[in-house]
Amino acid sequence: MKQPPSHKRMPWTSLLEGETSLARFVYDNDEVKKWFDLKAWVSVLQDLNVLKLTKNILKELGFLDSDSMPPNSLHCKLQEILKGNKLFLVLDDFGNDDPEECNFLITPLMAGVEGSMIIITTHEKSGRLSSLQNLHPNLLQTLYLFHYRE
Image (cartoon, rainbow, N blue to C red; front, side):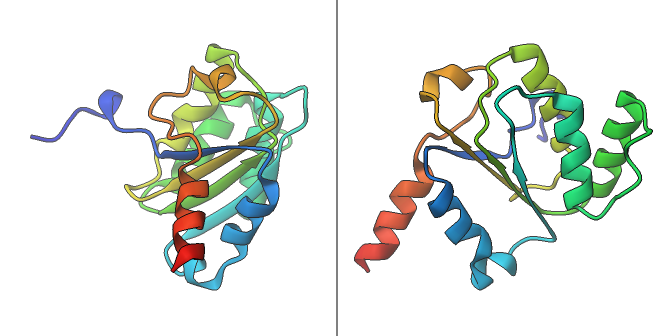
């Protein structure tokens, strides 16, 4: 039986502490590019503004007319763009631990299909982002080391 959307597993895949170069290596990899319909790399400023971040994600995905949109319209547009698409998103240097702001950001990202990947790099300790459920810290590092050894 399919779970209701409110219980849908979040697409968060990895949290890397200070590993921007590793995330960039994966993001730029030609083989990885084939697996996703949409790709976006967004650098997050220290003082995270979720609305500005949402606008930056939209711009990276090719939607350039987001500056004058109200918050709910931004989220609707992001959901519309992501619906039915597999997303690969990197949030570089993410440092927000406010559960309400994180949930506000996460909600439209849930529109991506199964197999979407969101990589978060941060200079903070993993526990700081405990409000993001189903996060698998350092999974990407493990995959990289496995690939390196082959």
